[in-house]
Length: 346
Ligand SMILES: O=C(O)C(=O)C[C@@H](O)[C@H](O)[C@H](O)COP(=O)(O)O
Image 1 (spheres, protein in one colour):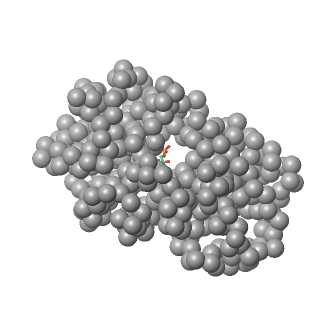
Image 2: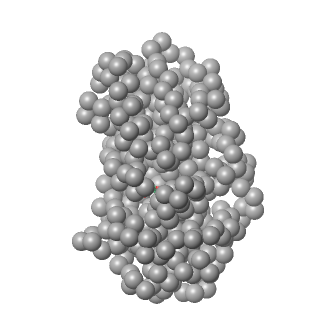
Image 3: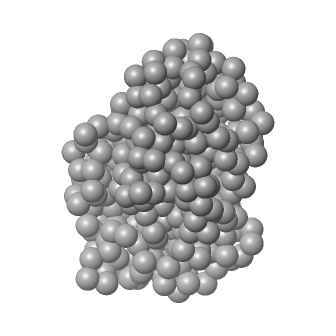
């Protein structure tokens, strides 16, 4: 099975046809306070359907990506006596698609959901590939399911409602797609001087297709899909520590830090030469200026022990071997891992 990705035209005709054909018993439209204000009115003004619907507003932010929020969602579904023909519409960024997709995937053992990503990160990454879930304490995405959205409806116009910070966050995942799978995509992206909706629009579809193509080869992340996790082994640990400190950074910023460290690690593990690693690192720093990592390295290493790619208690990295190619299940020397993090801090 494959998620159908469609780009919405002005009148949302694709979504209306989908809903007419599917004819769900009830719609649950999940939003956060931002998409409630900026995106829901656009969606509702274009919906031409005669299906009962409920709007469920969740609080935005990674700190709300919890089991408690999922329980609240499930309670609402049950209060409305939703049956298995109910449909969840996730209208939001990665937090909303992760939460709503997870709740849908476990309610009555699974009801359908669709994603209408409103952030760049949601569009190019989180809405595609069926990873749903929540954080456990500060451990990123520790609880979740693999459950494909029935469809993804993308509308780059929604990106115009975003603060710049959110746009930059999603750009990190686009760079990642280039680094792990497409030199051409990487080279196009690094020409961009200023990240704006107009400057990146032409490359969004390519990023989505790169991800979709990898998912189609390995939905359950047994092998090749692990390359999409480049930058996330260290990135997730750093993101968790910022979250714990009460000063969260965006997922993209964390992934950018992770990609810088893991590019250096690729060099330290002799997978790429110094010149290439410096080139990649410089380019990432252009978009993601250095942040202070005031964390104890051992705390970063401890969090990595919970990474989902680990095998037999060993931390396994996905590391690039050239621009557009990435190896997975790479076990690294602990001194190199530490050096790569220290390198970032210096
Ligand atoms: O889809 C994937 O596979 C990815 O690894 C993409 C990541 O960019 C994304 O952040 C994903 O949610 C991370 O998954 P996790 O399994 O490391 O929690």
